[in-house]
Length: 226
Image 1 (tube, helix red, strand yellow):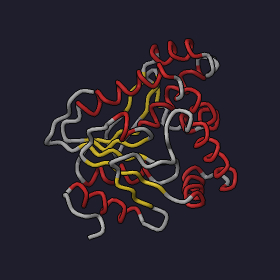
Image 2: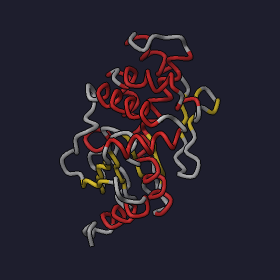
Image 3: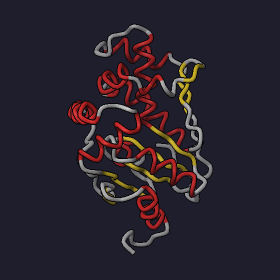
Image 4: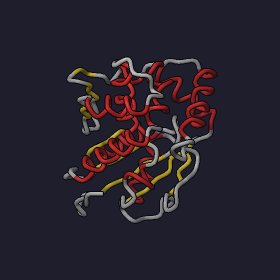
């Protein structure tokens, strides 16, 4: 992994879907004037490229070739973390049902993971003012040398409620979909296990500002419960 600027903090935020990673990460990045990277959006964009090309997500070699040939661009400004595929804005398209159903298969492709993780590590290394990186496998694989490592979790009902509100979806359907994705992703990552060395923050009963305050305390080398 490329070395990052030691004066610019790298914050790794891991955890399951619906725990609040995106909102917390963007809020934190804005607060400390750092870049922001949503690695989940990268896997979703790769999945959209595969679907647009008419490739079956289970076709390993074809999927890898399609992803490597796609022009993927990701904004790292927390106020505008855009996702572009072949020059077109894909920020909404990557959140659609088709992509959601197929993303675990594409993300489970070892060659695709290797390719995107290298890209994630390049972005982290080039972040001049530091960066907040969120997703799955961030702490153990993508940024094991991060200055602050947080595993953000919440109970299943809270996770489903937040994700349903975010996308205007049915809460029961969303809860079932999160459980399906957790199961599928568990073949590749450990979405429901806190990695070694991570500070666990349960956001079930905490507002975003309090979660961010706890992480800021960690950045300032204070106990998060002070």
